[in-house]
Length: 356
Ligand SMILES: *[C@@H]1O[C@H](CO)[C@@H](O)[C@H](O)[C@H]1NC(C)=O
Ligand SMILES: *[C@@H]1O[C@H](CO)[C@@H](O)[C@H](O)[C@H]1NC(C)=O
Ligand SMILES: *[C@@H]1O[C@H](CO)[C@@H](O)[C@H](O)[C@H]1NC(C)=O
Image (cartoon, rainbow, N blue to C red; front, side):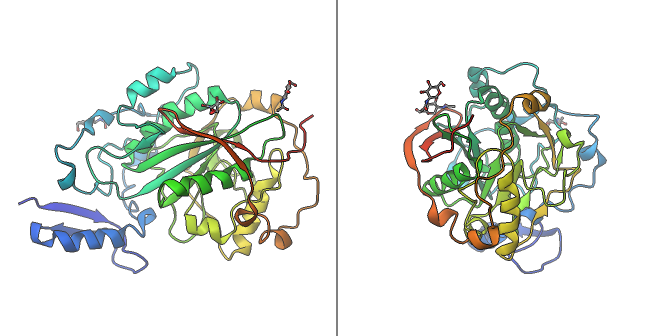
């Protein structure tokens, strides 16, 4: 009885054939769990070969991000719950995204009944194959945050991931330091759980296709937002690493995290791209037909955003990366609270050059 089928890509770092299928019967269950643990090593390859339907890429036909999510219901017995299917049964491809009406917090909570305090989710119907932490550096962008939460929660649930959403909030009026806040986020998130993947996510970006999987590449840091509407769905320049990226904790530590010393917008992303290289890695990207994102209010934003400022000292990443990053990170944790839709980490990141 209970014959289950699992299909997917490749095991660990070996090279089994694409699209292998393992048939499991009850006596094989122990071995099967072992296989599946190995199998967790190469999740980014799991879904290759599924993109054969052109519907997946037809952006003129979009679907609501909550479509069929209610098909995921609580399994009667958690102990005998099967692993989630390699491909989610409710994928629709391109999603309908609009920022015209601001959703209320109450409505978002109501539409996501399985999200627990702190923005934590485990699929109710199956054992997740993969755990991703979503880290958002944040300051006073309530409107963006609300839109993001409305879309990102169901988006991640569609992918049958275990996940948590962390907001890392910088207090005070000083210049924003996205990279340092993300370092703080990584340190704090890893205290909760041994995450498979860290998704570093700008608050004003929303993914447009549910096949854009929020899982890491096994070998290299992955840039997810390879096609933003703001840049006419192309990369603004070759080494661009801004927006949304996915790194395993190992990738992150190997490059000593992000620099703590960039203030204001922009410069840190080039430093990060350089660090990746210096740490012996390279950037891989989600293909542009899947890595599509809508950017909120970018016309308005360019009018009101903090002026781009060049770093106060000349950064020489080659010299500084080993000393400036996770190993030199200092901050004061002011509070850590569980909002129904996210974990709110508020930090004083120390001296910040005044924003004027
Ligand atoms: C929703 O699920 C039903 C039942 O499985 C299926 O028939 C339908 O095609 C799904 N809708 C979409 C848009 O995928
Ligand atoms: C932030 O700016 C406001 C208005 O300029 C000021 O009243 C407040 O004291 C500042 N707060 C900090 C922490 O510097
Ligand atoms: C996060 O927590 C801080 C401190 O408790 C609070 O002032 C702030 O409003 C919270 N931010 C969000 C977006 O929930």
